[in-house]
Image 1 (cartoon, rainbow, N blue to C red):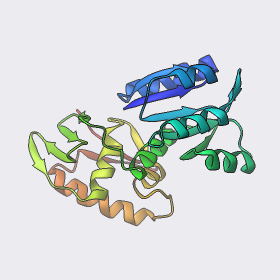
Image 2 (image 1 turned 90 degrees about the vertical axis):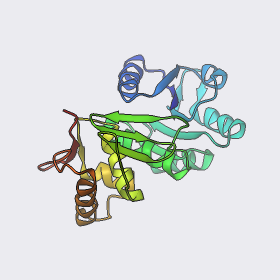
Image 3 (image 1 turned 120 degrees about the vertical axis):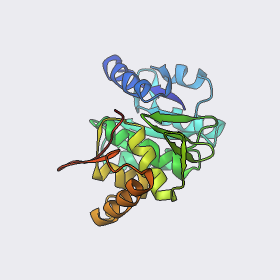
Image 4 (image 1 turned 30 degrees about the vertical axis):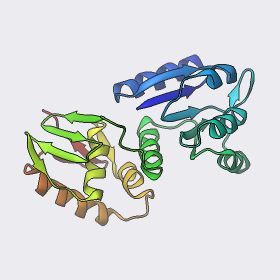
Length: 218
C-alpha cells in the first residue's frame, strides 16, 4: 500500500517511515504543504497539521477535492476537541493525537482502509510463516492448504499477520476488527478460538497473558 507521510519533524518522520516500511508499506515523505500537494497519488495519507509553509487543513482539503477516494488520517499534537472536529469535517477519515503507539496507528489504518472498502490493495499478499494471505481474493492458505474463514476471523488473522511475532493487544484487535473497544473480551476469545481450530494448529495463534495474541512464525 502506498502511503504519503506529511511530517516536518525529521525524527518523528524517520521513526514512522521505518515502522511503516517494516510492515511492507511503500512510503513517500513530504515536509511542507507544497511537497505534499506535489506528491504522486497514494492510497493513504498520514498528515500532520503544523507545517512550515501552511496548515495541514489546507492539504487535507486540497487532497480530498483532488482525490475523493484517498484515505486521510491526521496525526497531530493538536488534541483539543475543536481541532479534531475541524479536521474530520475538513475531510479526514480519522484523527490520531500524538504521542501514539505504532500498534494504535496500525489499528487505525486497518480500520480506515476497511471502512472505505480498500483494505485489499490489488495484488497484495501477506506471508507470515506457514500462513499466506491474498488480500485481493481474501484467500488464506496454511502450508499451502486452503482455509475457509469468516469475515471477522479473516480480519483478526490479517491484523496479527501484519505484525508477525509481535504481541497485539486485545484493544488493538477489537479496534481493527470491530471498530470499537467495547465489543467485549468474550467476543474476541470466541472468534480467536474458531480461527485456531480452522488453522489446524492451535500453536499458530498464541495467547500473550495480560496483553493479547501473537501469530507465531517459527
